[in-house]
Length: 97
Image 1 (cartoon, helix red, strand yellow):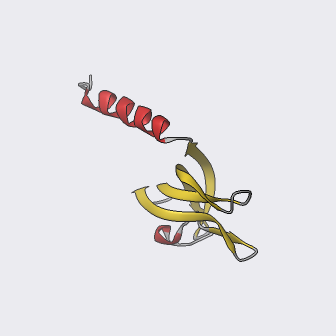
Image 2: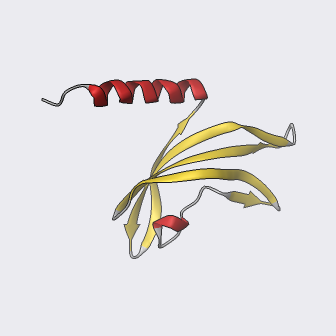
């Protein structure tokens, strides 16, 4: 794993084929614990093309100057992404008590 949060990626190659193609990423938090949301596509070997765009939120912990992935949540569809966005908009608009 990387020692700099900016170098973390979900790009993955195997047998000269990019199996996971990172399209974009946004670093949500940095430090001893980092959180990144990725936009990506996965290679579909059966159809020999990339599948639908997906999203993944990943948490990394930095130890001994290296980040290692500790958890991940994959958003399975645009519909699920919109439901998450709607919930967060609703909750963040509510007054804090």
